[in-house]
Image 1 (cartoon, rainbow, N blue to C red):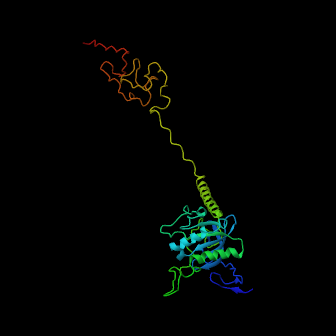
Image 2 (spheres, rainbow, N blue to C red):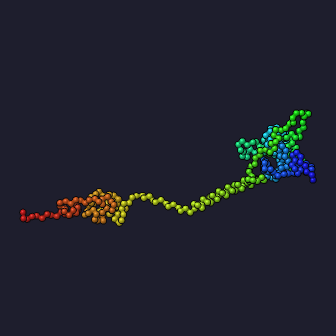
Image 3 (cartoon, rainbow, N blue to C red):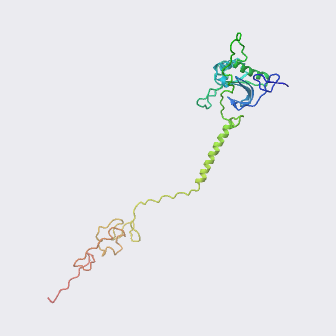
Amino acid sequence: MSTTSGPGYPPGSDSGGTPAPSPLLVSDPPRVGDFWLDARLLATPAGVAFIGHDDADTPVLLVLLSEGAAADAAARSRLSGEVNHLHAETVVARGGQGQDEGRLGHLFRDEEDDPTVAGQAPLAPWVALINDGTPGASAEALRILRAVDLTMTGQLGDPSGPDYRLHWIDRDRPGTSRTWPLPWPGRQDRAGWSTVGISWLIIVTIAALGLLIAVLLFQNIPPSPPPPPVPTSASGSGGSGSPSSGSPSSGSPSSGSPSSGSPSSGSPSPSGSSGSPSSGSPNQNTPSTPPTMNSPGGSGSSGSASPTPTRNKKL
């Protein structure tokens, strides 16, 4: 089988002009819109046609304009016109700048909900066609790209003067696209919602591990002792000499009430009998009644009789 290499056909195409797929380049995006790119099919200065699929494994031919064509309003308009003239069952979806109008504008897929970067260029126009594996599908993608770069447009009148050349013809890198959710670093294959699920699982695992470490650190801390009780009243008496809280005994002052400073009636001494005030009461250090001339003993008892003085018979 002989091979050909015509315009838009990579090396390795068969004699019938059917292009052979080639691996993706580093500059190629892994995903455009809702479609994952598997291989390159053909390339022209106007853009690249990729073999791709969506999440439902629907095979498509995705035509993406190049940087130069995507920046030219006339090139975007030519692509939109070619797509609007296609059969409705041929087009799966379309997207990018300026592709939401016309007869097949209802197939436009908006990507405004994806995160954007300030100053980012508008998304390059693209269209996803049904890929049935026949040479007609690749020929249709090539025809669209050649219509955008005016390769198939005939000259009007007799040529004269310098030749015409598009100003963006050398900017043939794939146009701006956005991939969300992001694939794993260093990988160019599909990275669906499993990427988001694994990311959330990692976050939950890290949070659970941190909670477990906190529990293990603080579970062996001894409890703090309770504060000492606050005393309700000051107690200054102690021992067996303090009177009971009930009614006082005969001859003793009331519990907790200070004495008037004089000894009780009938008591020979303020500190002798059981009726003495409890220790710590204010009348404990009260001085006794000073002795008089008639009471040399200083007993201080008002009820005792005074001794009769002896009469001198010699006078």
